[in-house]
Length: 306
Image 1 (spheres, rainbow, N blue to C red):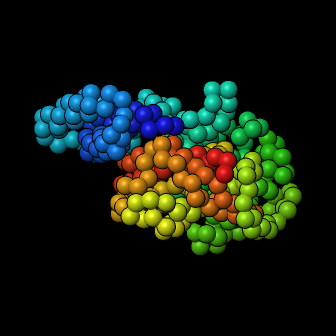
Image 2: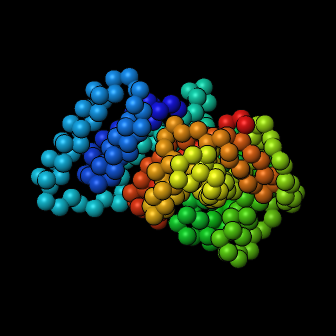
Image 3: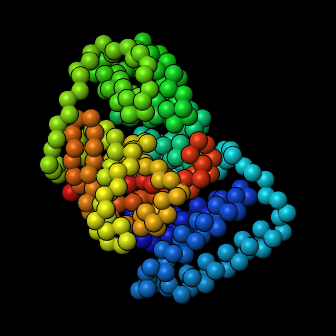
């Protein structure tokens, strides 16, 4: 995604928020888009775009002034959930299953956990994305701080004929790692075939292994006030080569240096079986306005060949 597409995306997000009466969030999205434009002095039609954005912000301020008390909304309307799901799905049109998976992950990132779980359950019948959908369902329950529900869900899958034994083994390893990382001790029954886990340190891999579960990403910026500083962030969701991270709102300096379209050239991806280095592009960045991570930001990184 180039910088122009990133700006357009932020403007669409702002309009979605405004349509829901989420005026503070809308203003934040407009400010993000404005900052992205100001950082591109050579952009074509830059002045016209700035004038248009200024008008939109003025209109937003007029609306805010007319509303005595905007109602607090923690659940986005279903039709807007669908718009958000489609807006942040970046997969190729010829891969509809992965596109659906990314859309469900997007809903989870925006705090729409119940809708995300519903969408992900519908993907368990799809061979190509079954394992990823299952892992993200479990991650949703962990995000809701209900690890018992995650374990119960996994146990229910042990008798699900849709899963091959090897697939459930991978799902179990994923859940076991997440529970250990969160310091949760719960009995986790083994799948029919448990291959175990072995951590292999790899200096560099040209392409991301298809089945690799990324647990965390280490970002080292090459410019700005954080130049040279390594920041490790846990991966909350993953859909193919797209990983979603959550950054706390207090990390303003970091957030200011991570904008849509920005290429990260020095990334380290950590998983239970390998550590590899590569590059990635920030494909989405937005405020989480509901759910357990409300007020923080989610950041999507598309992993590319290093």
